[in-house]
Amino acid sequence: MVGKKRPLKTIGFYLLVIALVIFVGYPFAWMLSISFRYDSDAFDHGIIPKRPTLTQYKQLLGFEQSLRDQLSTEAEQFLKLIEDLPEEQQKEIVKEKGLLKTESSFPFIRFFRNSLFLAGLSALVTLIVAVLGAYSFSRLRYKGRGFIQRGVLIVYLFGGTILAVPLYQIFVKAGLTGNGPKSFFALFIIYIVQTLPVSLYMLGNYFRTIPYSIEEAAIIDGCSRLQTIFRIVIPLSLPAIVTVYIYAFMIAWNEYLFVSIFIRPYPAFYTLPIGLNELFYSEHAIWGKMMTASVLTAVPIIIMFTVMEKYLTSGLTVGAVKE
Amino acid sequence: MQAKAGPLEKKEASLGWKLILPTVIIIGGLIIYPVIYNIYLSFFEVSISPGKPNIFVGAENYVSVITDPGFWRSFGITILFTFLTVAGGIILGLGVALMMNRKFIGRTIVRALILLPYITPVIAIVFAWKYAFLPIDGPLVRSLSSIGLMDPGVDLINDPNNAFWVVTFFNIWRNFPFVYLMILSRLQSISKTYYEAAEIDGAGDWAKFRFITLPELYFVIGSVALLRGIWNFYKFDEVYLMSKFAGTLPIYIYEKAFIGVPQQGVAASIATLLFVVMMILIGYYVKKVLKW
Image 1 (tube, rainbow over the protein chains, first blue to last red):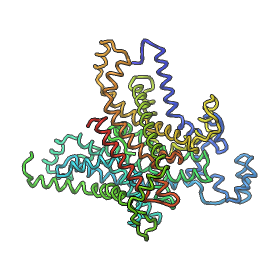
Image 2: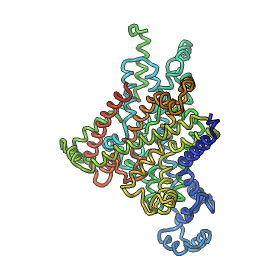
Image 3: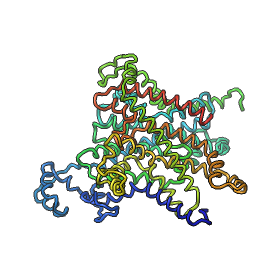
Image 4: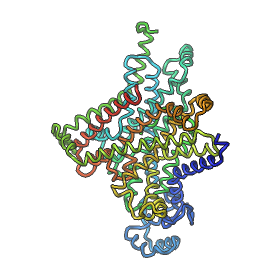
């Protein structure tokens, strides 16, 4: 289709495509590049790492302790004295002097675990509530369902910015702040609230595309309404259900506003967004580690998206993702 | 079928309500109620310790907001930010959609790649951009200064004068794939016969775009602009994580309510104003542009 008659136009078009790829891929390329470097090489020119290494990944995932982690504060001053030596030699000297400490300064795994738990669980609860709710307003007839349907659409448009103060006040009054576990629970509820409208909207749209005659046949065969939901509707909408789950998961995985309001005093409960951002502004910000953490944070989402690409892409255009 | 409510209809209605009940409780209790509660709070000096009661102050919060030049500055910045990001995102998204609607070698890969900015978690991509924008050492700054486009010593992210542009650029970069997807799916459904007919009439590329493509896209572009406008107006995390110094209203509210000495009543009154302005704009837009 690209201009058969005019080769110059074709070349121009491909140049445009290349420009687009560079524009989109630029930060990702640097992110990957830095994540395969030693900290001392982070500002080397050129995008190809000169001394590629997996050490950042090993350290973040806990297979290897970083030198920094093994040192106490006083010992860090000592490290300054020997910083010109190669890393292997530094390690030996440090070991000899017995300057090791145990606590990790970059608890990536903890952030990851908290995020996984919170996003996974809140998305699951959202999904259950949304399947029942969406079935109700897209399939059953009763007074007030039109009102509820429109209500969901309007709520879809409310931003977290407006809800931040009142929700905080409500949770303070309800006693769901003040220590780590309580605040974590508050956050769990907030993520359900944040992901519910978009899930309802997307599932409702999908349920309407399932021919009603299939359900009728099941009802005639003696299934109750609830049984048709579990035996007919849910299996038929599995792709949509997985899509909605992934979206709900992504929203919770991304969330920063509420986690920073509720969880900031409790580092043990930090999720990835707040954990990484706090580390970035602390003394432990090291570009190699930050980029590696970025890659590892993005990978689960990108994998999910790639596996489900067909459904997710159409989900994006049908329901749009609430942000 | 619209006979009087028999036992079956009644059963259906009662099941309907049972299934929707959890949804109604969650949305009513934790979205609708907070919005109203927010308006209530905006008339109080809100105490931050649970023991102390709130003090009714009437319209004082509103007066202090409206007379605060910082608020108006933020408000202006937010309007400009929303306008630029929506316009930029739509122009870029439209251009890319037109490109991806043609067949070329490697299209599948490029199409998948384009979605990356939008699906990658914000926290996983801000640091890479921050690195690129670092003064002197950042690769983007190095490239731009080597061709004489900027001074390498300029701090783009932590200088409030530049932060606005960085944040605007980042928002467009991140969100254009959303616009692109919406437009592409509409493009693919435009009938080829329109273009064939136009070609027979001797229409060039520009004429085809102007008189077939654009009118067909009017509604989808209008809707996307509305959604993006609302989301970007309220946008907090993408802006704040990229630069704390961008000065938009959501950041202003956040800092008033949760940083330093919290003034949550004032923050509530700003949020209420924001909400009212937004509802008026949406109502006007839906009527005039989308013609619902």
